[in-house]
Structures are given as structure tokens and as C-alpha cells.
Image (cartoon, rainbow, N blue to C red; front, side, top):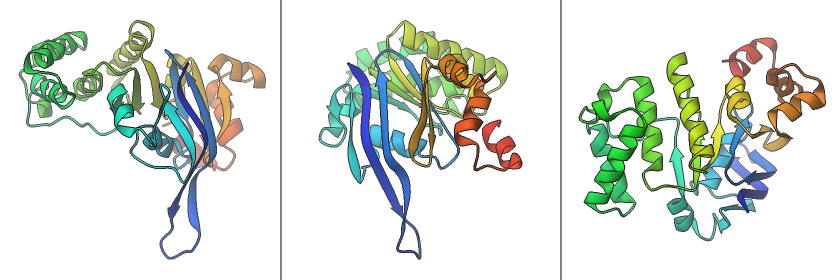
Length: 260
């Protein structure tokens, strides 16, 4: 069974002072098989965030249908929320609570009793190398530590699908590499399906089993990174990206948006 399926998603937003509406998604289709890492890449405003918001029940499409683990996101949003984990670009941790307190609170929110929540918190602190910092306030964590705590929070209830929104933005190279390794372990060892959005094409090339390039609210290319490069005879994923989604960008914009 596919972990994520979306068919014909349309989402529009009002434009202030105009009768026309901004079409963020334009009949977008997406299929993500279970147990893999799937990357969504595309220019800012292409529709990646809107797609993730719909799949995580934070937005409702104007048209179309979407399921996560076979559960309809429109008719059964509470069930979908119980089987997914979401790690947003901005941290959801309480900066005035310790790392361990954050994880225990998250466990309580998902119905774990105090003992079970504490046990799960300790498991995750050890897994993400945060045991020594468990008693420190989250606001004292480095960027890499904060991001590891964010992912741990998304895993407290053992979700079957994990959504990662630009998980390594702002991390130093060492922290970024460590995060890549942990994401790979989640997919291969825990069999968690992972959908990540990223601006780093080397990250998509390194991590993703499959990826989709989104532009103007549609998937304009989809496949394994190696397959997409081979089809175009392209030496890098950057070349593939520019072929499908870079045409409307000036050279200056490409430098800031594609290669940042």
C-alpha cells in the first residue's frame, strides 16, 4: 500500500484587491510508496508547503482527494494526525522547558501515561545523542541539538509517516551530515515513510529514494534521482532541476533560490 496518495489537488487563495485567486496547487498528483524517503523540491511558491499542509490536515483543498496510510485527510483528520509526525521548519519545542520535559509533554499529548512518556523520552534522548543535555532548557541548545530534539518530538508516538520541512536548514556541515544519517536510519531501520521538503539538491540526491519537482502547483517531474539524471543525460540533480523548474528564474534568482 502506498503511504501517501494525492489526486487532483487544487488550492487557491484570495489576492487582496483582486477578483482573481492565486492558484497554489493546480491538479497536483502525488504517490509515495511506504517505507521510503520521498523529497519534494521546487522554487519558493511552487506549492510544496501547501501540499504538506493538506497532507498533514492543516489546510483543506478546494478540489481533490488525499490519503495517508489509506486514511482520507478530509474525512478523518484526527486519525491522520495520530499516525503522522510533523517536524516544521520552526521549532515547536518549549524553550523554557528542558529537553526531557518537552518530550514527556509530547507523550502526554498523544495519550501516554507518565511512566510510558518518560521511558519513551529517555529512549529518544539516547538515540539522538541528547542524554547529557536532557536537563538543560531547550533555549540553550545549539542549532544541531535543537533540530535533533525537534525530530525526536515528531517521533514520540511512533508515527508511520514523518513529514520533515527543510530539516537541515541553518545547520553546520557536521550537524547536517548527522541529521542525514538519522533520517536514513528512520527509513531503513524503523520503516518510517518520510516526506521531506528541501532547498538543498545535494540533500535530495543523497537521501531520497524518489523525488518530485513541483512548479506552478504541479508535479513536473518525478522519479529516482539517478533515473532523472540519466533521462536527461545530466551530470547533476541541479541540471535536472533547472531543466524542469528553473526556466522562469533569472541567473541571480537561481543562485539565491536554487543553490542556497
